View 1 (cartoon, rainbow, N blue to C red):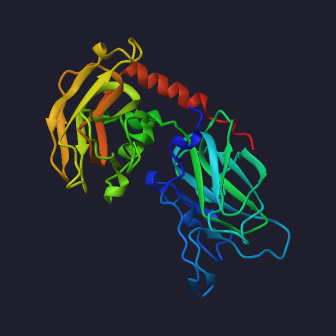
View 2: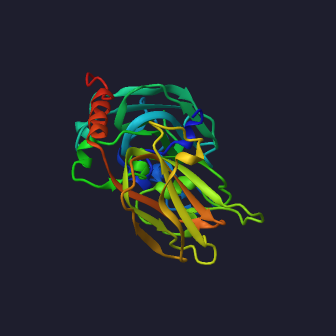
View 3: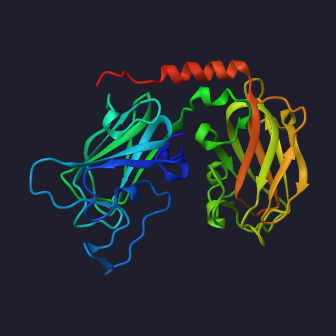
Length: 340
């Protein structure tokens, strides 16, 4: 995949990301950096400190130095790219920014973070722009530090990458193999007219219809579908198809099939097996279906008949012991050199 923005935003509040520290928040709070929604702006909306901005804005510096904010990623992972979005900041955006990352176990306080690695060296920014920067650092990180030079406003910070889950979290047994926070990824779909299929894999319940996946109305004899690479190969034992908030536009039915791409070809339709045969769905409902005796899968395909929207897809199962061993190896291998 060449477009890093198609990967999950590891810093997003949707995954539990948060701003752990900011040295200055005079005009606008740093918490807005990790909000999943796009930034907005209403002209001539003034508060006690001036125009209200949907982002982080520091005061004008009158002394040497620069401002910075530390973000605890909601999901640790290998960063593939960052977006420093200066939307609506025109005469008050920072001319330069840099991003560093560190990897610290547990839940450290901001002053306990150490061993910072440069992800993005000091680079020029443009105002009112999604400034996109690819990152080529082959380690996992738990925190990032955005530095702006010398001051100014940033609407959003996106940290796109590949989640690297802690294998110790899987030892309790069954997990959601389709969870984006563990590394599941949408690799293809038929249609994304009203909503991204990646929303299906987000944590938590959808708050509105807009937080799900919805396709355009079909006027042919086909159906819509989405292909998901599971976070870890495993045997699915429970499928949850959630149509919450979709009332007049839920699919009439759905089916789920799996395949093990380690031993067969994804493109061969004869090797796919049923996890859930075509089954009627109800509007605005969390459907749960037991899955009996299904073999391990690496990918699943959700078919919606004929079209419509779903809020979430959950596929609960247990990885094989060999997969847990591989996860533990990768978790350890991708830790950066702790030397500051």
